[in-house]
Image (cartoon, rainbow, N blue to C red; front, side, top):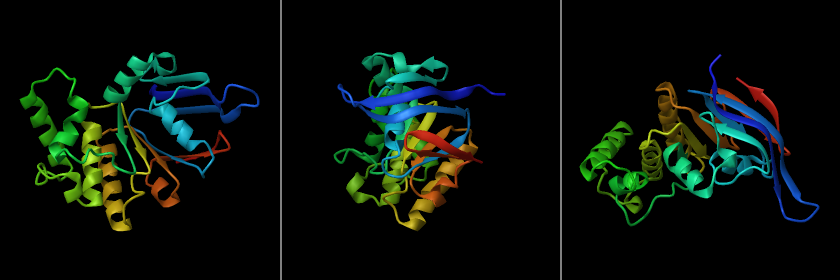
Length: 227
């Protein structure tokens, strides 16, 4: 049995300093193994956005442990969490989060700014990744000159540059029409086929079914898992 790359044990999240505090996550237990493609579904208010923030090390649990690659990231300093977000987690957002003033190539290079590679090595690496997502002809374009699907491909390329442990996708097709959304899901299928570990947050059941395993969260608890 392979060791999980993600292991959540007894995760609780409270908000507020005085009682009664808002209890959003109520004892989440979840393992994700290397190379899995998992979707997490939940309605508004279910806790899925809070869970996303914890998985992405954008927040820390009030109680419980979160092991990422065997390391308990729930006990790390802000500086260490920042390093983990940059090196170990590839983020794919619904709104793309591209920098409008930068070209496609420059946007993809952003996570490498503090790396030790030479400028030439960084550029060649990013060119290779952009070629793999079908954007070698758009390197000098800016986000305003791209379609929504192309913007999401840039975001996916950017998420891959540091060879992260996991890809964390938040409603990756939410801003796309159905045809373009299918193309992005096919790209994610391909990444999964290459051995990438992907966790996708979605409210769309049809999108969720593209994943290898579906997890449903309701009222702060995991209530259902299916393959």
